[in-house]
Length: 99
View (cartoon, rainbow, N blue to C red):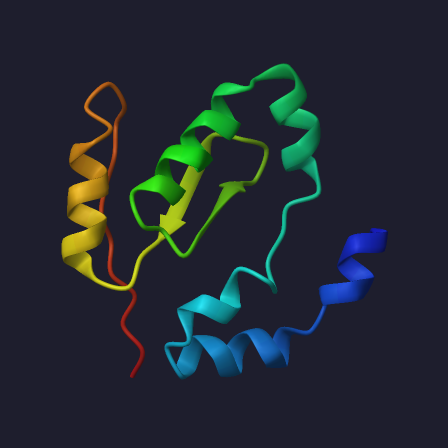
């Protein structure tokens, strides 16, 4: 476990925010320690994250070792607009359903 993970390793808090659809708070509870290392070698990751933020994402994160970067939006319409703004990239818009 990393130092950062010790600060935010609270899965119950994450689940509460997720179930309550409190998207704004989720960005403070998730991280990928490898992201900063990968960005040093592949600054396009930071560019993508910045563009997602400019397009309204509540937060964005590199997934795993960098094969994917995702953004979280309040609405599917916002996500669709952002997806359309990445015409040079393969994108997909998905919606999380909580039942």
